[in-house]
Image (cartoon, rainbow, N blue to C red; front, side, top):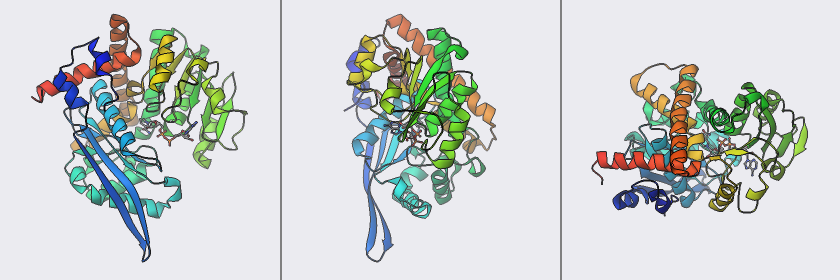
Length: 400
Ligand code: NAD
């Protein structure tokens, strides 16, 4: 079952039944048992998945998630989001995702490398053939991508590699760069506020959240609250984000960082201009959407708002810039890395950020135009824009 409401989108654009049929189901799903022999009497086993959701517009692109609670349903949902995200950003990729149900914190670096090598072994055909092009997601990092490259020796078979090993300067920061750029566009085009008079709260202080907070701080906004699984920090006049960034990157979390503490619930209800949920899915729900005091939400994480939470925010007329636009910076940078790998070109960090901002800027304008024309929420406007691109691509391929 697709998470997209085609009935709703048909109110705004024409979607043939055949397109809905193709976009409602993944093209292919692979479930496999990743097994490693640790010793003569000990095996490590992990339920693992690859979902190739749709490749009409290019190879299936999407990260590898390693987390104890990974399921095929979650992997499919994330793969589908990639289809809509790549179409919205107009980059030549389809959507996919893979998952390994393991707790990455319980793996030594040595064990993790062995897991990744076995993952490559199990999916060698899809990876070698360029049908699925992975990248990091929760629980995987640049080193894991370098291990994949090392197993296959095909530069474009994986993105998110370290810059010295065929990676892209700025790829690590790209998602946060895109989230912060989206906030700046929202201030200019919708909220009509200057960065210096704007306060923001960022939930999640991992890759996406910490870079988002740092870029917003550098752009002159007051980052009033940040948080991670260990709790948060608050200062209405603006936190010292570089110090918190350094602390979190040195110690792995905000635990022990200076500043006034705030709980995650308090952060989601903080009195700020913009709330950026950048942690994980299902954070703004039917229970807490009424408590949100921010004037707008910019979704850095995938799926941070549940459909019930979204309905409440819509009723309250709060602008919500959806994940498929806001966090597309990562996959846009992945596209630049893939293009670099195929061509042998060298890219600098300025070009990476410029491409992220340009692609997000085009999608943002399109979203605003559609939302104003059709008087629909921003999420629906993004989905309509992506749907039109997907339908035309399916026609171009003679799939419908
Ligand atoms: P990460 O593992 O680096 O960071 C996640 C952060 O969220 C950590 O600081 C963690 O402590 C915090 N967190 C988790 N649960 C929380 C909770 N209940 N309350 C507060 N904080 C909590 O992951 P990431 O790469 O930053 O990804 C975050 C989200 O963004 C995910 O939804 C991911 O799918 C999405 N995303 C990531 C990228 C990327 O390039 N990394 C790209 C697109 C989308």
